[in-house]
Length: 196
Image 1: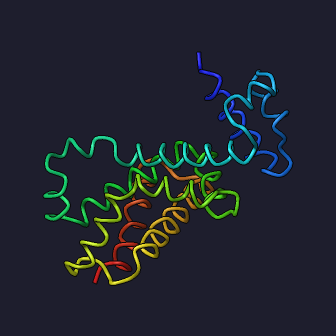
Image 2 (image 1 turned 90 degrees about the horizontal axis):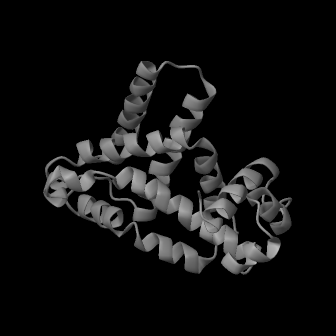
């Protein structure tokens, strides 16, 4: 059985996705989770705190899906230095795979990311978890393996093209074998845009 915090977050995801942030009350989230409203406030002191915790949870969930098993590659830094394109393609496939397997969570994460609902403190804390990828981009730019653009713009391009790929795949009827071709083709387009 899920713990109450997880039940509350799952209920919030469902209701925010269906009804939007502004139309969803903490009372309706508590009811959907099967807990008392007071219990919700034991875990989240406000709706804003719940939204920020939900954003953090979704970002870390997507990061875990992308990062899972990468340490099994061996010396990750050596692997990345040897073949940045292969590493980025694998990260791309994993990110798209997570988004396709978690479409509601992925779409909600993007809405939260683009909204003004997330505090700067939360964004800073979450960004700390992505230091490896930030460092990877900085080093790749310095080594001439990526186009010299601001790191934040590299992240935005990556996310935007992944979101476009996922949107296409979720709105078209394609076979799994065709999906792999679309995912790889979309990565090729992305790579041509960011590699010198």
